[in-house]
Image (tube, helix red, strand yellow):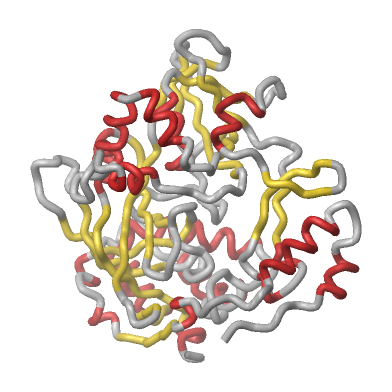
Length: 407
């Protein structure tokens, strides 16, 4: 049952200032009673590790490094900070301290020792959303582009850094009823207004402001880089630039593959990153119009050292980091994944994907309780797998035993 609207009188005091009118009206709209959401029906059920298909065959040591990166983040948080997700299922940062300390002593090159560690400190928990335990799993990767720090043919498509006038408002700071809700915009006078859509930005809405990080030679490559969220740019002098996600314009993400299916250009069976890219490149004028249907636009930052960096703030581990809907699946926790994935060779069939992964990233298209996007790394094989992956699967949460005992 939806909660009643929050008192705007209390919010008016907290929001005093130039954002009052714009944000206040938006808060009113967001707190109207909402329809019943399927995700409200979440059931958690502890299960033995023997119920996890392939558990004993996995290389748990390969997931150990990713787990310890999550621990680094938890260790920096205040002990009473709650993890994301619903129902407080993952507890507070302090609830993970014992497992993280014990994990630091585990040898990552000894898979058996790592498996015993997870079995000793964690409880596997089956989770269903509105009675559904299975969902869609896709993949993403770190693409390579060609570019230059200076504009000049053929490098004419800019990639922008985060604009200083972009305002990201965490509405949860104003009301518990708005936890997980954000709005993005910019001030125009005393009003907070939406940030320009992708079409406006591509047309030059941000030109001349010194936001250009690099120019690349292909607008289609730039479009897919924004979908992936990070990548590498090969510069003409042999230098390699690494780019990571810095923020977005707050506009809704739209998967253009759906549009190509709707128009009869691609079939549901053959739609993939590769087939979409091929059509966009072969039809540049129509392709530009289709790309503009996705109003979301991503801004980047130049990375130093290892990367890419996920939403948790840690470097992603190929094959072991997964993007989730943080409203429903807590960021940072280990998750047992039971799915399949395409082989790098398109002539070969799907392969099992039963392994321990870490929820360390998010994505605009990743919505729902059983919906994940696994990071495959860099290179042709990663691109081949990620671009064609749209496989069914399920997962189990791994929670510290003390937390699971409260279920």
